[in-house]
Image (cartoon, rainbow, N blue to C red; front, side, top):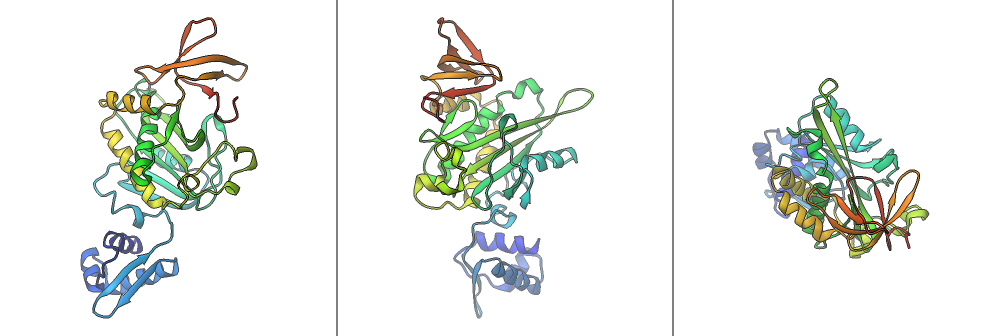
Length: 330
């Protein structure tokens, strides 16, 4: 814990020298504890210079997801008020649900450097190579009925786009309902899962998992998805610090949640503006059939309105929709 506190302070004052005495006083730990934390951080790859009568200065840092990297910029944010930063986990969503069942307060964010059992929608696997992506899950406990949160993932999609834009200067688009794309390739997957109270079926918690392809190269993607997936590094031509991206996405989630569901008009407008599904031929996919349709619009509940070949209209509230020109659908 002392190491994370020291790192957070060095991060906050990066480029400045801080004396061991000042750090000890501000953090409430001994000078020996400060020195021990500094040495531990150096062993982990942090470049921390020291100078007599000046103290310590953080000059360079590895690309790590940890509390010391995130907690400072997230001060005062409900989402991210409690951080569980793990090295390897089966799934951040699964761990976040375990924490929720154990009584964790809303605002918990779970991150991992690597997932061994990352999950997407409909039970699909989500590739999570070590140190390449941003894998995080957040815990929410809104005082709402389950049917009142059916559009929550759509709001999250807007927030993720907000966070990526704030960090990287580019704004991705949204493929209904919750795929975030760049150049018709998938950049982000989002999975929201609900927990209901056993007797009343009242909403107990929501866990939203977000997986971002951050610093993947083409070879980091499995051959079968190389023409369907993209990373921020591929698009920008440079690596992205995952901790900085995590901070911006968490802050965007916090702003979103603070206005949920009252700020519907704002998020609906952003969703409609960023949705690439409307105005294109689509396939409506079920386990037993595929139907051709044309995507007309997003209604006020974030549902997809389509026109069928017989010119009738249908409202799609959930399910899988393939858009012509994306993910191999021609």
